[in-house]
Length: 91
Image 1 (cartoon, rainbow, N blue to C red):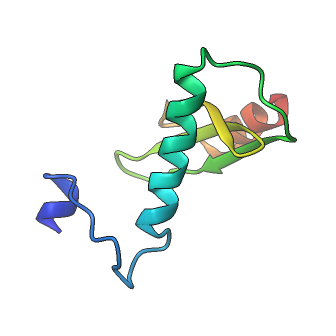
Image 2: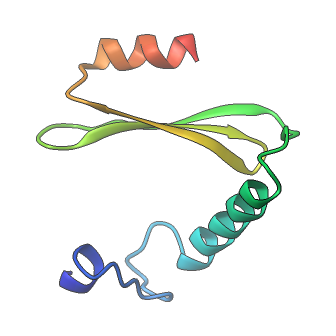
């Protein structure tokens, strides 16, 4: 746990992981290539991915994705469910 949270070291084959490290690395590589290319317009359907904070110090994060590229992230502190719903609906 210390290695994951403090040192940011992840085990690539951890069976407890919801998302394999290889997926995260592939996504980071796609974003890096897009960023180096000057952030050109991306083809693909526009999708919002939302990680809703439940309580405590968590943040609600909205990822704006076009195809396989996450073009931006929004983080919001202490929003209630209706605020988050309105934000997602306004897209």
